[in-house]
Length: 384
Image 1 (tube, rainbow, N blue to C red):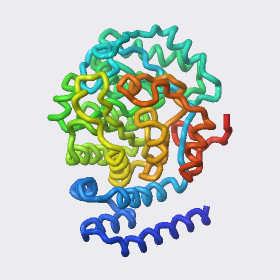
Image 2: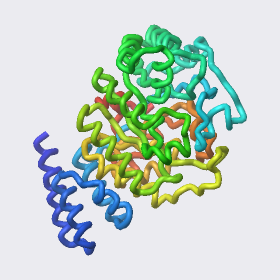
Image 3: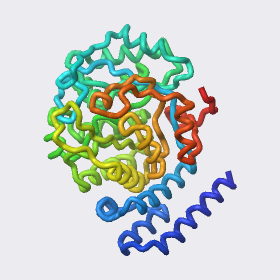
Image 4: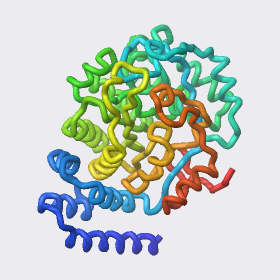
């Protein structure tokens, strides 16, 4: 451990020395000094990084933060998704998944969901459940589902129901957010995914997903969950109608909540994809913009332990590149169990990756692969 700490100190000192010789404006050099010292940049400085920082400089800063938090490790997990339905009360303009836009319409029964759970190999450690906000299914249905999953696979960590789903089912039940989350936790809810955040700016949110729960409701669900000992992730949908000021506003609200609760495990930037939805006229942003998003997020969210690249959204190659822009987690094996991004035009239409493929991808990026559980505890490495 002392050798590791010593190596990190040497790396940080080397980075500080490099800053002195970088030919950049003084304002950017000041930001670099703050980051090198482990400090916190302001919202204005975050916007400046987006507007003025070139990609190499942003990668350099993000890598400093990544190295400080995770060393050379890149994490992955054996996981799978279940998407119970695409029948949705909302009609988000960017969505290619719900029954409003998809060519298919489904509503899995509880037995069909349990069949999917029982079909998984025993070494899979996490189940991710999220999908549409169904008009007729209430909190007792979803609580009952959790109980049956836990009865069938008590070893499985269940990360379930986005804040938007939770807000709807809890309101429908007449419970407070605290009461609803206490009930679901008693049924087997272990953590909450980060979906549904989209963009917090109220004007843009109303334009692209005006029927969805508000930004304040999303934040309140996560804050309440954290207070109850239920950890979560956080996301942002970027690359559509938002500007840099809106991205930083989003990150700032997350950073403030994390200061209060310390309940977020990871932040996940989610790229807008323009196929099969009502925002198809908007061009997708470039790879350069993707990497800027990762890098600035890693620098800005100084209190988030991990930054994740969700590879089904950006593709394997770009996920691998993101490991040089602050990312230390590539999500998991997925096992061809999600359609949310494939319906929106992502390159991998059948997202599945073996553990061996994940390990190879990480090693090719000169990172050390580390299998984890849902709480980032490190597991013994088995390449199968």
